[in-house]
Image 1: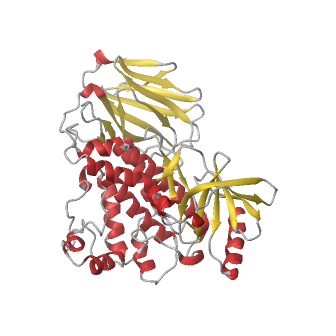
Image 2: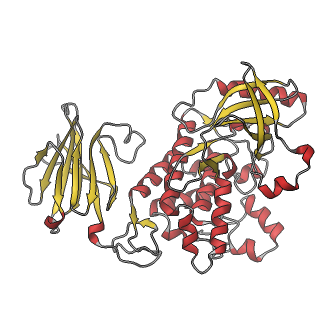
Image 3: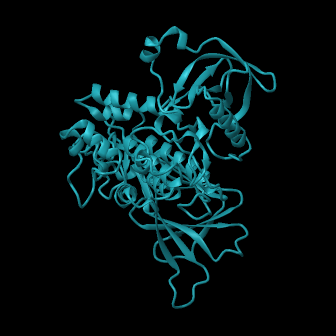
Amino acid sequence: MTQIATEEAENKESPKKKIGNRKVQDRKGTGYTLTGKVGEGGQGTVCSTDLPGVLIKIQTDKNPSKRKDWARHIKWLMRQDFAGLKIARPVEILARPASVNGYIMELMDGLESLEKSLEHSFLQLAENEDEPLKGYQSTGGLKRRLILLAELSRTLAGLHAKGLAYGDLSPANIFVSKDVEHHQLWLIDCDNICISERSGYGDVHTPGYAAPEIVRGESGVNMSTDCWSFAVIAMKFLSHTHPFESGIAVEDGDPDVEMRRALEGELPWIYDESDESNAWAGSGLPLDIITTKQIRELFNQCFGPGRDDLSTRPSMAAWADALDAACALMHDCCNPDCGISFIYNQDQACPFCDTIQPKQNSALLKHYLMNDTALPDEPRWIKTNEVQVINLGQTVAFHIGAVGTELYRESPKICALELKDKGLVIKPSMHGIVELQKAGGKKPFQIKRQQTLKSESRSGHAVALHLRMEDHSDFLSHPVWTFIW
């Protein structure tokens, strides 16, 4: 699906082409009434139904051979294991009327396409030219964008781990919560999912999001093309800029010629460090204030060398790790006229309003591994690059698994920390061991029940939290989180 229909388009559409109050039936005899059009693309139309949370995809191609191939592909998709992935997969095939080729998919209510969310976001920015950040915040701000992108990257990484490529990845195929306080995300319209390194069904792609080799007709879809499309979506969602179309070459040159060059990969990306011929033209938000260094490196790797060399494009797992790390660095701005969460910096200054945040409003924890079997000439404390910010009023769970990996949140929870006005509350879990070690190399002591490090005791001394499982005899090391209190 490459385009979500707007109300204006629907109003202009001929009544004969409208889909509404049409009855269909699946192979099990369940009846559905099509009540409206959710979206339309190269392979068909997605319709809402009279049943909550149920959508139907109708194929519009009339070619008998293509219809048969499409139906066979949908049956193949129904046999695939997508458990744990946020993909609205086909659950049943339409049987009646016989002239209709289509399938049923389930999707929770309260969602809208990311394309519609982006349109609203761009509109908010345009309508608030004097205070553009209000428009950015009203559509979820930076924190929500990073959380949603992390969810999307994990879903695509899980799909790629099965040797499958999604295919036509675009904002029209990604559905997110309408309410900006929620972070649900699902992929729909999965007709193009296929075994990677093979052409997807129909080779449908969305202009502006497809990898240049697809636009040039040199390749079908694969995992590398998914990674490209994801990076474009991530950049547009975060900064409201396109990695190629938002450059000076496109804006100042012949629109038709330069746009074609941009989409076919003939122009450098707008933040290319060695070629400024298509440098950022100034629209949207600058990349350095809404991304971490790690994310910027992934963008540069994808749109720089990855433009021509597919093997250098970052994997979805790499994107997921970087986005999770960025989410852990979110610092809430205390300025009520701003309120945007920003990426933690040493000065604790909000880049959107320049407000310096009170130190008591957050705690910064740094991650180490303690080598429990270190030899005399080996270091016991091994520093990692993982960091966690806890904001006032926020609770964060800490697990035993390897930080920065997909397995971390699936591993047993050892404790939770909550920052309150009265202090930092430490809540051990039932099967975890939490030991607190204060500055000066003092011996750690175990915290067996909820305990609070009081705010008045916050005097700038180093503190370490050692985390272990109850039965940790098989572990050669254990995680330690250090912070200043």
